[in-house]
Structure formats: C-alpha cells, structure tokens
Length: 131
Image (cartoon, rainbow, N blue to C red; front, side, top):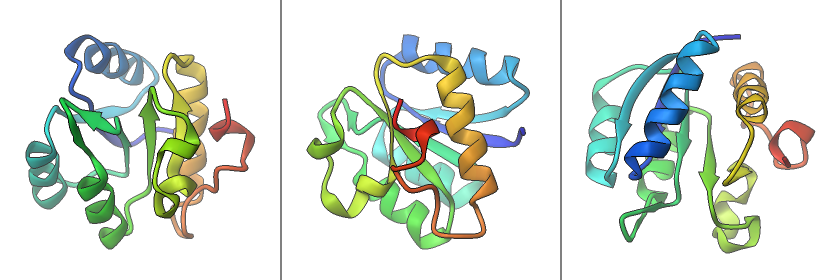
C-alpha cells in the first residue's frame, strides 16, 4: 500500500530517516512537524491518509495532535521510546512501535492502518503493531 503519511517527530535525524524510508516504500510524506502547534496546523490544513506520532516533542506530549486526528477519523500510531503502559489508556489502542524499530515493521503497521481506516483503527493486538 501507499498513501500520504504525516510525520510528527522532533528529532530531525529520526524524522529524516523515517521520511527517506517511507519515500523509498512508495509513501508521500507530509511534514515532518516537530512541535504540537506545527502538527496541528498540518492536521487542519493538509490531507493525508495516516500519521505517525512521537509522544514526546521536546518536552511536550503529542496527545493534542492525537485528539485532533481522532476527531477527524484519521488513523495514526505512536512511534516512541515509551512503552505501551506509559501512554494514557485512552490512546493505548494506537500504540504502534517502540524506538528503535525496523522500517519493515513501520510499513506493515501503516498498511494495517490503511486497511482498517474505515473502522476505529488497528488495535494494538494486531501483530504488525506489537513489534
């Protein structure tokens, strides 16, 4: 699968690596956004199919971005150094991959999100999202 992916990541090297890999996999990248405000601006002003969010953006949590995505019905997942239980329970269904992760696992997780877009999103119990 392919599509447009919003990257929300404050570490420029990580953002560039994810962006390059997604482009190589056939995705079009929106962003990256390194702050909550920048990400919210992109959520409001651009179109994309799925999003990947780092939880901690320079000391600010990205949960307002997750809430905006939920309100618009846009599937997303967290790419984070935190474990699943460090994320508030209301967002755990979107826990995706813990850093460091393999790019193939990211592609599988994004493909799952796109397939499940018509529903509530991919639950954390799906194998592609537990890696």
